[in-house]
Image 1 (cartoon, each protein chain N blue to C red):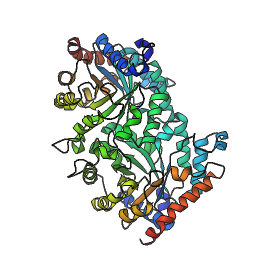
Image 2 (image 1 turned 90 degrees about the vertical axis):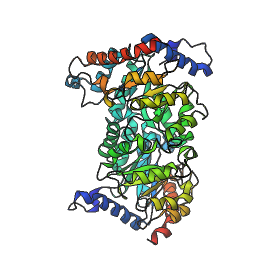
Image 3 (image 1 turned 90 degrees about the horizontal axis):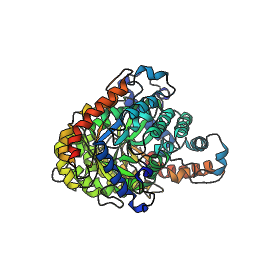
Image 4 (image 1 turned 135 degrees about the vertical axis):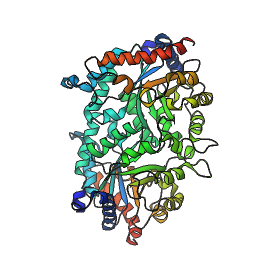
Length: 288
Length: 288
């Protein structure tokens, strides 16, 4: 999601975040979509014919992106999958970022978070070296572990709020009187450089019934919502409970889209799966 | 920290963890040390003469390891610093691991944690591909995000407990009646595959007054204690409040050791700084 397509060359730097949010909203309306596609690309799961390519992971991603970019407002590479390939995995990742059209947001699903000087290093890696638009960050270590990511004026953070996995029960729901996930949502919004548009939250689709409450706690924030498809969450429930007047949702599907087909027509099958999810979002987006 | 030096070829696999803990205890007694050296190697901070080397980061690490391995029971590369160098950073990391003697534990300071299939990917990367002995993990996502790391029988996890940074105040201390860090400590020890020796915790040295309480909550666990040196924690206070009958502490210093000198004699200066910390630990270890 580059500035140049947003036509903001004359706009004050301080307004970039607002412009980026507006630009994302334009994408939502234009594509009638809230779809984020997770690029959890595992060499063992891609069609076998791709293994004759010099960089099979990149070849797979390129085909997926070319087949789906008019339906998606964001792509979310899961960094674990690239890191697992060693140095060449990072090269596949860099090549993938080059073929994602500028107007589509790219989120590093990295769930980083460490003391300040280390978080700064992570932020530089993902925001400067790889030019991601956004990153997912873990909140456990608090404000100075998230701050270095927020300091990048033109970049976004999606902080883990309420996650989609069973283990969310262990810590995020305690104490009942003010569960940790609520405390994360309300506290993080008071941190320096946190605004409704640059600080978003990860909220699992499997917790759709909580989305209404979370939306009330963070009315302007964009919510990154994993867990539809393979993890069982419903697009309709997510839209119904989680949208705001700008859309405000990035609804992610990974395996359900990218592995929809296993043969030569995998990209076409991925497009069908993406189209199906987008079409479930369309009636909600058309009301905006 | 390889099995072969522990002489455990005839020992049942199920006993490896115990043996590994015993082996670590042997290291503690032999070296009279609880020292972990953090390899937070930043190319911009290493002596300039190393930049003529083919791999300056590796050359720096190799010299540090050669100068200090008889004083340290563990090394802890901070993954952010290697990742920031792109693909070549991962190569520097792999080369560094090769020159660390087998008897010294190697901890990936990565603070990973994600849904199960992604955590499994991270675990495979650090435990199988790079053969680390241990990894630091973030607890926010709960049991199924940590489980895949614990499933590796011969490997250890250091889960974030109470961290050394100011942001620890934001979430880890709430609610006052049962603070999150206590809940993490007590809950995590009930998870499958968690034993006192394979599941340790990160507890900042800047919170030394809390170590006694934490030791009571996790009597057998090894605690990885960052924050002495650059962050201001005291070795004596940490030993006094945190040790158990096996030592039970890995007291980390990074910048205070590896950047003790900036000239050609940097490795010698690092050794002096390491020796100084080890000598502060020695009287405590000698009482074991």
